[in-house]
Image (cartoon, rainbow, N blue to C red; front, side):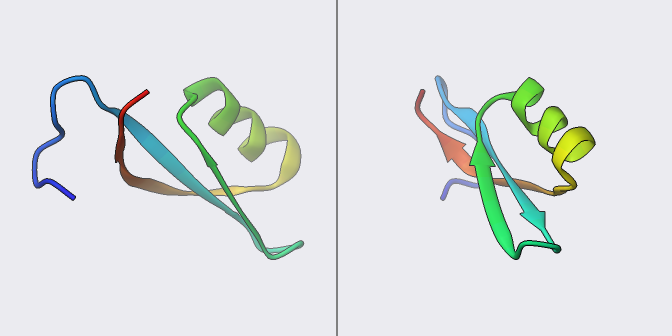
Length: 52
């Protein structure tokens, strides 16, 4: 992993659901926000940067 994101990469968000003990990963901000609001996930921030 690079200290500074590389050109052309996007964040990979990591979320955790403590009820069902499940991790969820997405590059979509909308999908991340929906998982938090509708499905009880907690954002754990950016796991890393990935190429789309």
